[in-house]
Amino acid sequence: MESVKRKSLLYKSGVEYADFCINHVEGCSHGCTFPCYAFNMAKRFGRVKTYHDWLKPKIVENAIEILDKEIPKYKDEIKFVHLCFMTDPFMCGYKEVEHLTLRIIARLNKDNIKCTVLTKGIYPKVLKNIEKFGANNEYGITLVSLDNNYKKKWEPYSAPYEKRIAALKYLHDQGLKTWVSVEPYPPESIQKQNLLEILNKISFVDTIIFGKLNYNVESSMFRNGNEEFYEKCATQVIEFCKKNSINCHIKFGTMKEKIPENTILFDGAPKIPAAVE
Image 1 (cartoon, helix red, strand yellow):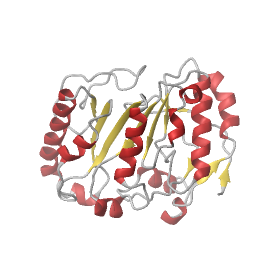
Image 2 (cartoon, one colour):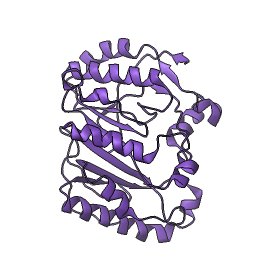
Image 3 (tube, helix red, strand yellow):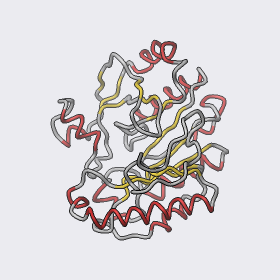
């Protein structure tokens, strides 16, 4: 696997439910075509030239060395560190990425820095070892459908949905905190499906985040209808979470009207209104 060197790694996120973040891989083997915001940014700034370049990830070989320098610098500011927004920490087919991710989680936990993790891959069972990785981390998956034909088109090389859910359920059964990002959720113009069926599959988690599909031509063609669609979906998610005592966050811009504030998503994070300001 190819590698790159970086001068810095930890950064303050602008994402509404995150704090500090880390992206220790350049590129992603999952090849999502929503389109992928991370790929678009990498292409825009010249880090990759083509989609096929993006599918060949490069690991940050000096990641631990950088963390050793940056943790003392930012430790007093960090509430938690998110892995990752611009790549996948457990991407399929790359054990090198998994091994580095585990080292990074362990390194952060060593300084009592909590991690929130999000993947379309498979979580390794070793994360149950709370002496090495800590008990306060929160592990999440992205899940926007249960239809394998949809996955084949939009997330072609990611882990199968059922395996993602099973790996997350395993961590839940070990007493760890789990969450799901139901984002970017497709409108009916792209995929007709039963949202409640998806929610029932993940009813064991502690937190659900829901958001609409952006940056998609086919989605924007049905913008007026989509506003009502996402309003209904978001309301359904809120009601489901309330019924099942699950923390809920609706991404800004998904609903038109304000709704009551949600609970704190991740310990130490600020309370965020679950609608547009």
